[in-house]
Image (cartoon, one colour):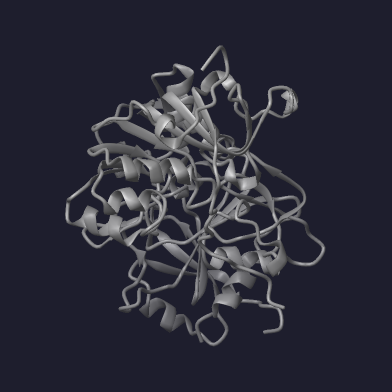
Length: 233
Length: 221
């Protein structure tokens, strides 16, 4: 690599440095916009005792669900895990630690982590078990809880178009958590469908500026659909 | 007769006001998108990053990159916008959503709602529900009046872990439309063919009958 050229030649290289016990944040909502090849590479690499931060944890047999199945995950930080029977089984059997976080709080904790904000107050979860053990405060007569920022050793991101410098554009609802995961990584790795030369992407349209990105690679994506719903003919 | 899913969706849609930005929960609330009353326009928000949900796609237009919060493939209507999860929850938590319609396991007379966890049995997570009940300007809870085993879901006090405290004022069930006030559920409308006695029998919490209570009006019914 030279200068700002962040291209890597293989998925192995894309995840170089990932080790047992690390924290990995991954973009995606359900299976939409997940960095599926980077996740699969973790499965091949075999790292264990990982803490995963992701809105969901894939499904049985695809996405992060594979890492669960292979017992590579020590702890999961997520907002909704309803689509994954193996996860629910491991959780109820206390084989995995889980921190369920309201979806907006999860996004904001990652944003805060990337923005150098150590914690913030939110009304979400006040008066529920989410507030247990957390500082609370009243503002204008309403209760708020203090939530801490989240960062990750590795942030895994799926983009649509990216350039060598790490500038990324996402497509439709595949954007979801990806931009906010991108800012929260000590090492941020982006896989894109289309890797282009600098100058190709319109600077006005960049969703994730390259400063957040350390490595970028072009991948091929299955883009599995969880619920294919169509109009009745 | 208890309301069908379609009738529930119709009744939900009667709560839509022209110009509302609305977030519909997974399941029956999502169906309400198909019953927007004539002459009004609403914009549906999906917390995974879409403002302006359109109808389900034709087979040819199915796009893996375009789903709703229920992970169903959808389309984007004219004038739609895409954004990140952070921005989506700025809309929700910042009080920019006019109405959210979502399901529940229990609601009580204090306006508490439980919807995300049955300890030791069901672990799905709260998703965006805690953010929605904390941030939306108006909340309509939609659920069956009783559980599958016949237990009331309208409680003196929620027994399950809460999603939000003191935030619910309106509940639509398959038997009735009710409001919460002064430590009781106030029956405002009963479903066609359902008696007030049946509703009383199925309600564990204090139930009062509004002076202007009436049978629910449904189009074509």
